[in-house]
Length: 459
Ligand SMILES: NC(=O)c1ccc[n+]([C@@H]2O[C@H](COP(=O)([O-])OP(=O)(O)OC[C@H]3O[C@@H](n4cnc5c(N)ncnc54)[C@H](O)[C@@H]3O)[C@@H](O)[C@H]2O)c1
Image 1: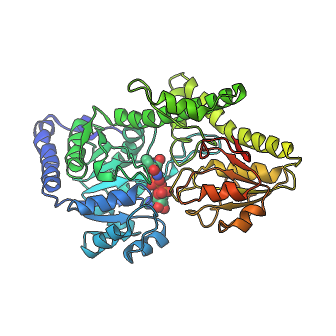
Image 2: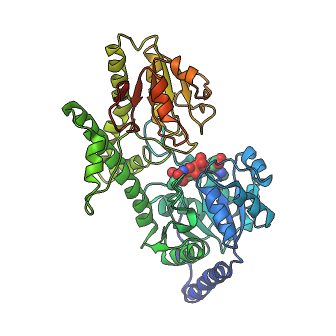
């Protein structure tokens, strides 16, 4: 679509900058005085904590979600994210600063709209952008001059500038003049007691400088530190680098675990010792694979985009290969340990300890536990699980063959009735001493048992 600037007459061009500046200046004033009405689209692990933080910082926030049960819960003060303090929600609702709705016509009421919807991968491991596209179309339907849109969902560089901007400009309104568009990635770390939304520095980049200024003005009032970068593409790339860094290092330490295991060297002892180096070393711990909504998925957004430029990033693919292999390694170790005890995996009863992808949270998305459960079932084992944070195994479209399962209470009888306990997640609430005392065999993927124990095998 041709730009209105290109079509404008010389006279219109001479007055346009003042008019454009006025729209941005009015919005900036509203943001600075906290009179700007904020809207958050997608009230999940990212959107809800951000919503509450903005309400706590004195803004009025309208939350949007397509899931009616979430809207109903929120408006009744019922929190559905375990690690989030429910009192924050009741306080926000009570103060009248927050209300949730699935009436998307009300997007027009907001001066600033934050997009916090999912960005998964397709089965072919390509970006699944339908949630972002659908949200951009919803905004397009009610876009008005003077609105700032900020994409927070993790994505490939160019999403805000190419995809979202294109959809919004179909209204005839111009980005940077009539409405504004920026990218600011979320850095939530669920369950991390040391950091909360308000204390984690936030990277901000505009599709254009005015949009960047407005987004910065917003986050300056919400988080302890705003890190301004030159463009939305740079901000998008920054988020991917953070997650790729983790993905690659997790793969590296997982590979080292397998190498040292063959050599009879204890990886945990090595890591404890290496961590004493006060510079130039950052510790990553091995485990049963990788999990969560970010680390196993986001790096492939860059792989996909890089192909457009004729490059295939090798580190990311390699990290994927190693991490995806880990559940198979764990199974092999379990199988060998059973074999040494004269047992086959087929017909053995295996208790999986932990479904969540990391300790002390209720999020099981992309958890390696599912791959492990599936492999166990395929090889004829009988499986049950215990997870103090995940009462029911969530059904996933990717694994329809997994039967419905519920967490079993962790008792002596449960442990004794299984041939092995397989520690997948190192939740603090589990009594690991009780586990080792009453299980015939424990397979430990998390380094829970540092001193050698007769019935413990590392995997
Ligand atoms: N979970 C994390 O720790 C984390 C950390 C950093 C970044 N991110 C990124 O943030 C984004 C959101 O992740 P999340 O973990 O909050 O996901 P989530 O699944 O917990 O929440 C997303 C919400 O969006 C809603 N939704 C989907 N389509 C919608 C639409 N068209 N309109 C309105 N609502 C819609 C869903 O119902 C859901 O409530 C993703 O891009 C993710 O990669 C997540």
